Amino acid sequence: MSQSGKTVIITGAGSGVGRAVALGLAEAGYNLVLAGRRSKPLEETAEAARATGATTKVTPTDVSDPLSVKALFRSAVDTFGRLDVVFNNAGIGTPPVPVDEIPLDDWQSALGANLTGPFLCTQEAFRIYKDQDPAGGRIINNGSISAYVPRPFSVPYTATKHAITGLTRASALEGRAFDIAVGQIDIGNATTPMTARMAEGVPQADGSVDVEPTIDPKLIADAVVYMAGLPLNANVQFMTVMATQMPYIGRG
Image (cartoon, rainbow, N blue to C red; front, side, top):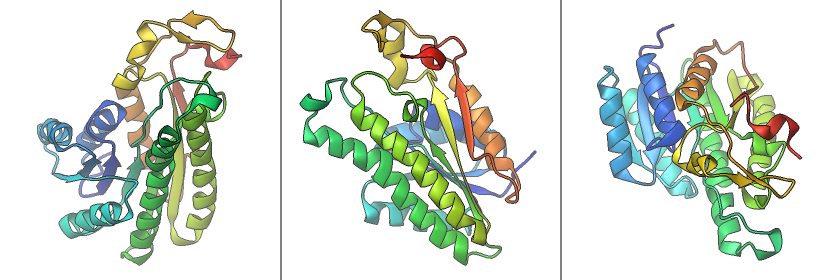
């Protein structure tokens, strides 16, 4: 179904899942506001999206900075007149080390990118969605299956992604009175720079190191396009898309 004329903000749009989702939404007819820390990857995503006929706006953004996030959302509304969807995708991992050896800087960096960023974007989205006419809109958070079953040596990432699930549930409840739908996609092993190490083997809970399968990020894009395109009286609150053969189902 064409979503021509609707506008979406995508954080972390310069690579990986963010770029794949941006291209999927471009093909569906959305106007794209592409956010991320580095301009060059965002411009590359924008160029690929424009090849599909999409209109794009590149806005370099630090999602952990409230002023940067405010500028991002203001830019979206100033450019396209309204906002319809936000994909809270930006996030980082940290080096796999035991909890008692995690540097505080790594913890705080993960907290800023993976949790504070989506929180700030949710705040700004709610403010716009409440005030625009017609009111309402959608937020899709990029969670992780690690929110439910963690990997070894992943405390910062797991804790922040677990918190995203709480953010999704609580903001979905608050949003109902304002026609704001909030959902979450939990991804297992999409092929991105973050999962490149899967091909060489990653630590498992039993102490072994095993190669894990990955899946085309376009499959994630297709899922997000479906979630984004629903009418506001319907919502996918949680969806898991994962490599069928990965050890997640029996991890531990």
